[in-house]
Image (cartoon, rainbow, N blue to C red; front, top):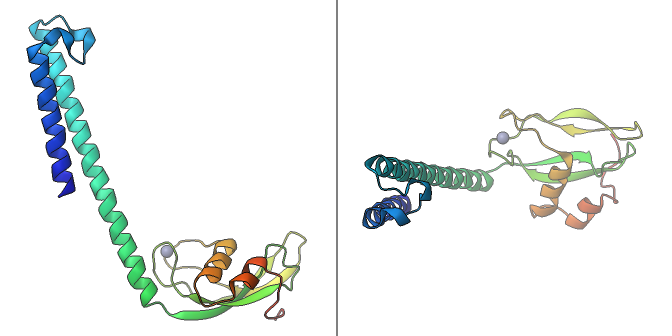
Length: 177
Ligand SMILES: [Zn+2]
């Protein structure tokens, strides 16, 4: 285990510091406690041990984060492999003028957590000029909100769509319903 090794190293490094401190108390890391009274020594050692505990906690937290990241990546991989495919219509670009829409195929999973995306319902998309485009929208049951820009990007890169067309948003696959 990586963490076990790291913790062993932290303990060893602390032990080395304490040993070197006892060998030459006036030249240790804690210069302000260099007078070698027993009180100085107590303080210096306590600080070294506290620092060791802190480093161990950090190493454990790091390991936990790594495990969580790997678990999440594995879950996403599985979800991606078994995902349902759905074709949706949504704005081709930010200023869609009420008519620039694209129809794209998406893996029906939330890109953050891998849970299935929400039910498709007709949604009004209003651009900067106030033009309304009726297209598909959904709310994810997991609570993760999605940005249209990211969805377009996903469509451009998931291998099911014409990436160039989607990114430029210039070609209209389907007119407004
Ligand atoms: Zn989610």
